[in-house]
Image 1 (cartoon, rainbow, N blue to C red):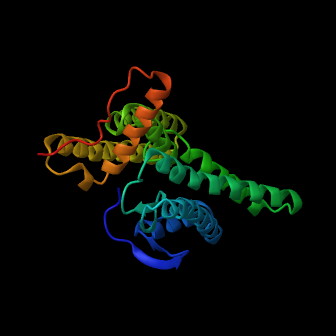
Image 2 (image 1 turned 45 degrees about the vertical axis):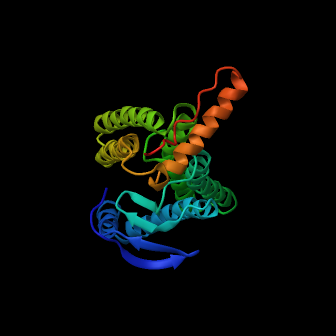
Image 3 (image 1 turned 30 degrees about the vertical axis):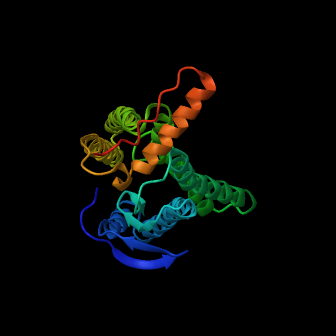
Length: 259
């Protein structure tokens, strides 16, 4: 989504944390729109919360055997950069839910502390983390909820058809977000809606390329990054069909012979 390389900030829990050039821009905009230094400090706390969210993804991904190239923070938040796709729909669900789980836990903890120590900063931090966790659970790619939706659909319909359906849902949500944002004059949310639309399209393009090359036999499926995921989705689908209809089981389609 964002061009250009990030610059290294620090390393935490073994993960390289970098900042895209748009991150300082976000801090400047926060200072202008939210009262100078106070706005910048609130933005720093928000990006610290985003980093915790991405660390949740990264720790679970590493535990599931998915390499993480690093975490980048940018104007719209952050991203844990997976060097390879999840190995299965179940792995994708676990990795996707880890981030919102961390945000919701942090939000609950901050609000709990606010009950004992009534500081407005704790109230703000708690609300920000709750919103971060809940927003990312929207079923729209590339948000975490969209990845969960894609994984659930892949188990029933296969990776390609599951991704196509998830992208359709994502675009509907992007249109609804954009319309609501325009009606309320929230142009930041308009930009987020555009980002969701474009990145959902990028997800679809990647899966379509995987499907076309695999059908053409341009390479063996074992060499395709999504092949292991596709095979796991096929296995889950056959297992589910066997449990429902023992006499009506289709063979897996994720692995195809290459002559």
